[in-house]
Image 1 (cartoon, one colour):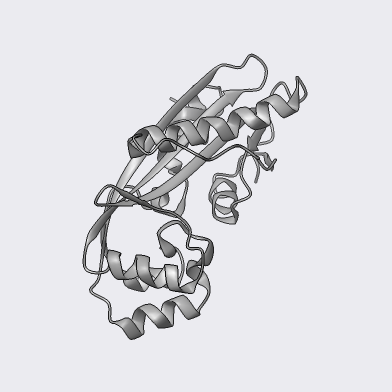
Image 2 (image 1 turned 120 degrees about the vertical axis):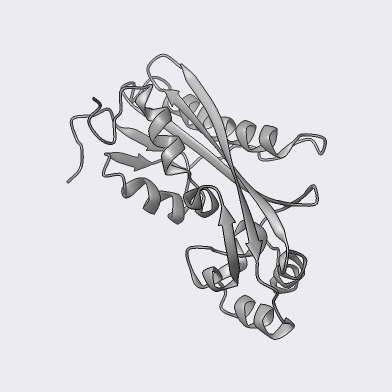
Length: 203
């Protein structure tokens, strides 16, 4: 049952994974796609990158609202996969996906997700991030090729989906699982508390 008496949430994302995750909290929300510029300087740290991009996405929706939906809280989020200081984005084609997975196999990489929340009424904002370490199994070329041919990696940062068939590629994780999917629900619920939106009653 949705918690309709609370302030509405606007998710500034078209990601079906983030939509499913936020829906699991049973909070009233709507999706408004963000068309923010996602270019960032190469010298930025992963922490800077995900927090800045999450804020840009939320701000783009905030500006488009132009005073409408003033009771809402806008949530922006961004996820990146980092190995040896290199950010691995979404693959451009199957060959690129195989290249990324070959790099990741048998090794530990880091997933960073930034979350930004903006009060649509007064512009008050907070931003934070979570980091999760993911260790991949050692994978054969045939396994990597077979996974890529499922099509699942094609719109995923790092070319895998931990919540899908890609779970079979992962040996272990250290940190928040939801962070790897694309939205740390423990972090988000803590941030929403500050805007008067409570997933569960507070003591």
